[in-house]
Length: 356
Image 1 (cartoon, rainbow, N blue to C red):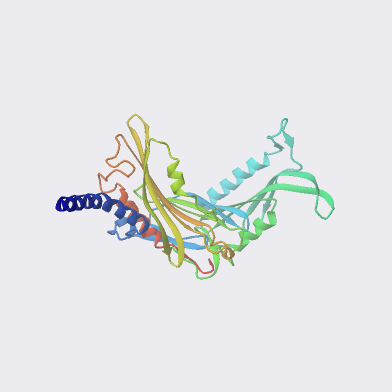
Image 2: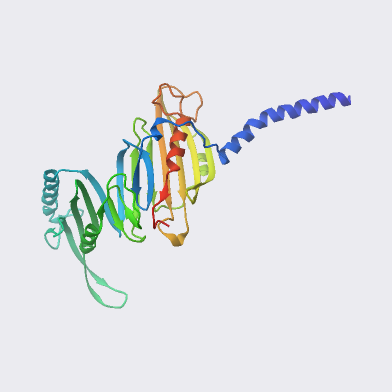
């Protein structure tokens, strides 16, 4: 009788071990992931990009799909490579548009602006427009009263073959200073002094609270999108987000771990999901996020977020709902190739001098 009980106990323990082992292993890999991957060609030929006060290496041929920068509280966008003729055409066309603005159409009837649009051609080769001029009565905290004037300002400048657009509210002098201050940055260059950079512009100087980056690239031949943003709010709780997903959405948590990257101790999260979008339509998505809060005193290191995302639509539910479908041809991106891209790119993220 005792022998039978022992046999039964051994069988039960064995069954429990078989049941628990893959689940324990799964939890372990989520929090202590293996980041060793076979090299793939997309990581071999890269170019260095300077974004804000950070540099990262992306595959050559990555296509810019979003570029928004902030410097000294002024918005800046790169408009790309243009000939002088194309640049002059752009400026004149935009001047015709803002010069035609004579009233605020958000009022009924439209409320005329206080003065006509103004154009300024600067000594350093830039052109600025001020428009949508308006005023209001104001009383300041010290008890004085007066009239506040508001307007919008846009500035355009071409350096080398690159065209840059600056925008602000009621800050014409600040826009002018920003356009004088920056230096042209050649692709692949990485600054050796403290400063802030966009793809082709470098602003020397220490960090300021008026800086910001929101840039996205589509990696070549993959459809995978890389993005970097700062400053951002603290990261959301992805576990709660997944718990609130629709019932027909299969989800899979892949990683949730602390991840140091070149001296920056950030938080990594990776998950995937499959959603039934309609007849013969299933969307599978995988996303990776890395957030580095940084010390609050060391702005703008606080609140940088790096992400990589990819989606695939199939006519049938993938073999493993919640995961990307298996690759059918070498160019397809499956989970392993996505993770290899993510780990390879994130490992190159580093602060340039003066970032921290």
